[in-house]
Image (cartoon, rainbow, N blue to C red; front, top):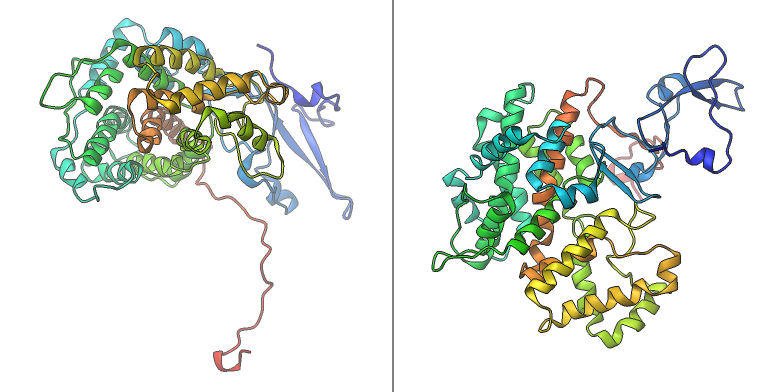
Length: 452
């Protein structure tokens, strides 16, 4: 695969080595003082080159200004690569669509954590180890009862995951590789249990304990939907759909929640606290709450006869209405995860049926119309992974309030992999972004009686 070079593609001058230098560099000049500085240029295995500005302030006395850090690399990583223009998503070099089609979530989790796909022996041992960490300390079930019954499940998740550090003292030392591994396994294993208990608590139903004889996705569905009064039959179609959903959401490079986990971890915080911070960041509607926003949008549209009107509103630059679930901030092409999710969505709808659910019928019709609209085709505003995942969850009977929780279950393995990589990175420092100060200059203090 050729490395992306947008500057060259745009006809801009290629970066050249500075005189006497062995590496590529970019020259920064100050026309006022006549001084100039050579900024090293670093190349990754894929993606655009980056300018190394670590010594910029020390050498030139200036910072860079980049709100949202959209043009700033905060770390080096070997885990996930995204090319938004080409619609490419790779985990450790493997295409996401191929992983979702041929692997299961446990295999992908092992890949993200360890760098390579496991052989049969490694996979079996990994699954065994994870399954033996799925139960929670029994006192944690009492912790749930401290929340109001109508608390949002994400609020419960933040509290419970953060509280794990109060129960598992033997895996808090981030400088001990064994303790880091134990903490990682515990988080990956316990997150479905924590999520399912949050759901059961909201319903007033008894908690369902995990079962070691079930696969990861099967176990999650069982804890979510089983009741003690009767046996729960796990649908292979729904189990496979859940497994794919987990794979497709496992990691997505340096997004807001992953960056939050790394930033929290850079201070030396324990892994449970870092993942709790990631969950809080994921909760935002612009991030993990996007699939929830899709369902809210569909309820706003209300009926298939209104679709044309709302599509027209979405094209109007003076209208605040947004067609949620279409397009993506990173992908300027078809979201590679959406193609797999679309197939999974069709399988789930066939299994569950949509004849009696007007909202799902509305979503299917909206997708059909948008994919045929020239405006959306020209701007490459294709349905993204959030559009289809919301429909799938709705068809499976999962309430809207649980959508982001399921996202957190999947993303935990990505957060843990990124956190582990950060801890092992000798160049990583505590996160401390700079700012462009625009407030008042220094001024004298005036006693309260003399102020006007």
